[in-house]
Length: 247
Image 1 (cartoon, rainbow, N blue to C red):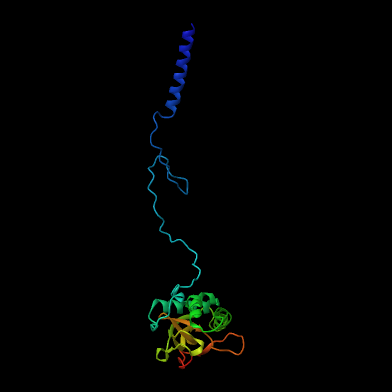
Image 2: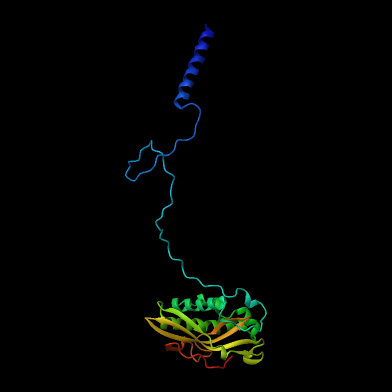
């Protein structure tokens, strides 16, 4: 009698397990494919879903913020050379693009890659404290001059070209202008741009070289009697490069 009850219990458990297995569809198979989605809710669950396709609608993306271009990273810490700077190089193009970005935004820091490097200035100057001179005179004056040029040019003007009067370029020898290392110098380059449909320009007071690259060292003036921003010889039209001289 006890054996029969145990047999009945085993049979009942086996029957329940069979029912559960039948409800799960037997052995596991591949997962059912998802029904295609429909914005109107009319998709048929039995229809074979189509493979997903990429959207051909352009996605709106936020404009990238403006940024400076590299000119000659790390070159200021290297020794000077006598190489004559070319205006037909990526370094020159980037330096002038950075200067223009600084002028049109009013942010002088954009022009830092094309400004004469502090590391090079420490090698050039035969003065007791070249670092504060660079910071408190050269860079400080440049900041004032960029902001003055921004007030003149505004933000909507377009750069056309930069004219460098290479015929006025001269090698400044050691011993001149409190320098212990020589460099190429050229005065009175012209930044030519268009604003409101008219050609206009202003000058770069002084460009000097380091390892065959032109750098801005004085934008508005080489010397000034008051602490204020200066725009060098603004003009309607391309203006006149130069004059020669200076260091």
